[in-house]
Image (cartoon, rainbow, N blue to C red; front, side, top):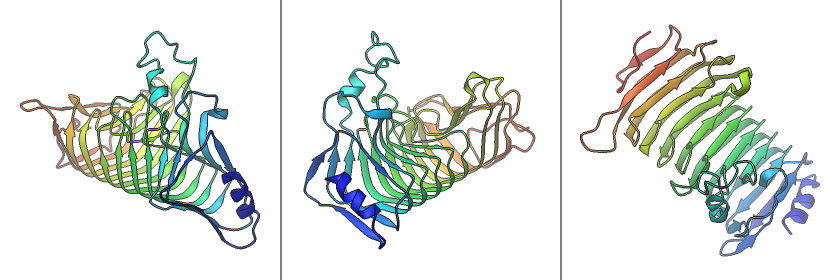
Length: 316
């Protein structure tokens, strides 16, 4: 039913809205909403879209995907539920006898190659693995999202941004078992603002440069974030000796607690150090009473600046 409604709306010359009614739950095995469409399109999700509670084969490990769509708005106050408990239980991080590549879990909600995209006022919960993924997109605003999975759920990154430009992630709550927000290769002009983060692994750039690959991330702004018991509150993670360039990054007005001793963790590339990195009014304290937190900062170029921030990187 969803696919038929999408195909009809996508083929319309007039702007069209698809409604997922409230107070109803729709079980979906997997679905790919594919463009390009002939006009702008909206999907108002008021009810719940849920995955089946068993492990089963999902093509490309993408449960719900929007691909090659321009001028789209996804909103509505409803819930996208990955029903991921059985996937977590069979993860190699939980089930130690399980090979890590034997049954990789799918991403719950993916937007691929989308332009002029607005995603707002949705709950994304209990993803099988990664929760929301923006890949190869441009001109994106994601706002007023609630992205939640248990702290012990493996690899459930909240919002993952890859090869995406001009994206704002705003006014959202993210509580997961992995990074609240992860920003990886090819992403540029990214703003993360007014976020509640934790539990989870904080706001991460990377990882970047595996297998000595060349990666580039630039013009990242992280502002107004409240951390609650995160590990690695803010971090940059690269594979050493790789050609990874991270530059023009601002962390401003970040407060909260860290569950790990290292609250600020910048591991930049030995080959190409991070450039133009600013911490301004970043204050993270230990979650446990009487404990202290530290900053680990490696391979930062000369333009690193700390202003009123604790713990602080050594000045370079």
